[in-house]
Image (tube, one colour):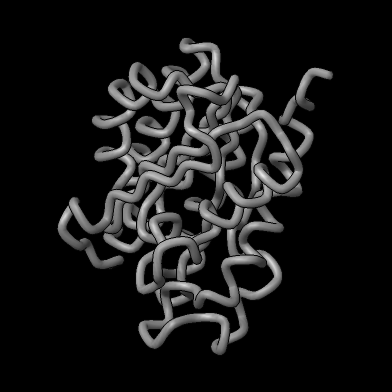
Amino acid sequence: MLPCLRPVVCLIVLLAASPALAKQTILVMGDSLSAGYGLTQGQSWPALLSSRLHEQKLDYGMVNRSISGETSAGGLARLPAALKNDRPAIVILALGANDGLRGLPLARLQQNLSRMIQQSQASQAQVLLVGMRLPPNYGEEYENEFVEVYGALARQHKVALLPFLFAGFAEERSAFQADGLHPTAASQRLMLENVWQVLQPMLKPRPR
């Protein structure tokens, strides 16, 4: 399973511009794949996204509340406080990998993510759902059902979907750290581009 570090280490809050000053906030709720496991601060794809928003003068602040080892149940438990405190305009949900790696019931994963989407939408936030895939040793049936969870949720709740965070480099062993699970620093930009392709149409330009 994806390792879990102490929360004080795992919980990374990244600000492109202070959310208190920015007109809108993007909130990332994810696991170690979004928390920058094994990387230095500023190398993760959310940190790169924060920099891009700033460079393109888009009126958004970034808050990354991803934690290594997080499951969909953990994200669901933490989301209400994040929605209340951060008041996001966009919520990026990048959870489920640890549920799958632990072989947890997919019905529970779908239920948890569905509730997170509903809570985000109830707070007037747009949602970008980030999908994952599992290693082949988990069996074709479970893998296919796992992938379909994300597609079914996107259709049900009419939210934006990135089907696979590792699209374009998942088969390249050199793109991952020694554990074979976590992308290298160089691969974070590829992840950023995957997210950006879906996120960009959701962003509003800064008023003139």
